[in-house]
Amino acid sequence: MIRTAYDAVNAARSSEKISTRRLINGLFTNFFELHGDRHAADDAAIVAGIAELNGVPVTVIGIQKGSTMDEKMATHFGCPEPEGYRKALRLMKQAEKFHRPVITLVNTPGAFPDVHAEHHGQGESIAQCLLVGTQLRVPYLSLIVGEGGSGGALALACGDQTWMFEDSIYSVLSPEGYASILWKDAHRVEEAAEEMRLTPEDLLEDGIIDRIVPEVKDDKSMGQLRQQMISEIDTLRQTPIEELMAQRHERWRNF
Amino acid sequence: MTSKFETPTPSELSQRTDKIPDNLMHRCPICHQVMTHYQSADKTCPNCGYGFRLTARERVEAITDTFEEIDRDVTIPSRFDDSLYLQKIERAKQATKLNESVLTGFASINRQQCGLAIMDSHFIMGSLGSATGEKLTRLFEAAKQKRVPVVLFAASGGARMQEGMNSLMQMAKVSQAVADFQAAGLAYIVVLTDPTMGGVTASFATQGDVILAEPHAMIGFAGRRVIEQTIKQAPPQDFQRAETLLAHGLIDAIVQRVDLKQTLSQLLQWHQVKEA
Image (cartoon, rainbow over the protein chains, first blue to last red):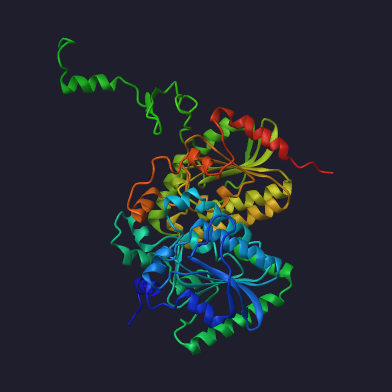
């Protein structure tokens, strides 16, 4: 069976998809969660803290959708609020101070669109993540777990490398939004998905992402992803910092 | 001819309206004040101060003493070959006499030297294309070399969908250039104009050392329609207006268009780099 782009969209959104929290517990040991943006709130959509990857302390920042209805309501189905991005920002700076690599796990339809978010500077909080993220003087690796929705995803994926799961998508807006804006018809979503080049294969070919990793479905596949992360973080850590920064600069400058 | 006290026929009505010049009257979209063309000669509403949307060239005229454009030849990369999109670009180029949705260069504003970027909402809604990002990045790089501040007039609907992820990547690319520029101790001043939305708000438009806005400019991240669909009710009328952003601490000041040149030159003067 040939997989269409719309199949990829559905697979990325599937409720069978591994949760960010399970992924954290499988990839890292001794995860200690840190809460709050130190200004106003603790956004449940962003789960973050310190953990060990093969004995090396790292800062982990993930976007989670939640599994129960209560959790989904609390995380707005994985749509962070400005307070969530500010928590991420705080922990990125903390990671830099203590020379910890940053690993982000992204699964979001996009930043939450509501009046509260607008009043609290949704745009500005994402803009700060871009400003700080591209300059962060520690290794910074991102994995798109399911949906990589627009600026809300890019905010946590502007470092040294971006990886994607086989069943994930990354796009400038949702295929529904694309169809509705360009053709004034939200039902032409399959056609939109096809045209948008949002699958991991397309994005790798276009040079937007760096690697496609197999879906984590069991202990074995978890172990394999873990090995890939250990090896890449190791390489990035051994790169002299000025060289790492120059590589990252070139990566983004070339777009 | 019918007496003037009788109801005119449709053809008489049409003859009369033909004599009225086009664009004689304007209505302010904010306060609904009706004004003649002459009353709004500076393209602001005499009642509420709203600044009507300017083209980039009009803005240059209004704000600078001298202006030297750079990167006139930067245009969309050849990998974008969709014919409908290329036609759209062509039409925008002809309508605006710009090569992209931003005009960049070096200017003097009341004798203060600066790099200047002006986005034009008449060019595909000022959307952020690859060439827009490239022109902005080059401006920050060049201004860093010259060691002068940068002023940016934001006006954009956000990312450019036709360029997909390449458009999204411009947000990070320009942010990186802004970070490099600011790390060199140089000032970046933003003026948010109507409208500034989406990916532009979520990147370089809100990274300024000083952020100004024009009265009543619409500024936000998510579009009103998207928010309505999410919360299933209409947001307050003024929730993405400059005045609301000021009240929530998101911008530094709202400046009337008539004061803008003076305000910018004062800010620039305070932030010029004095070389040892």
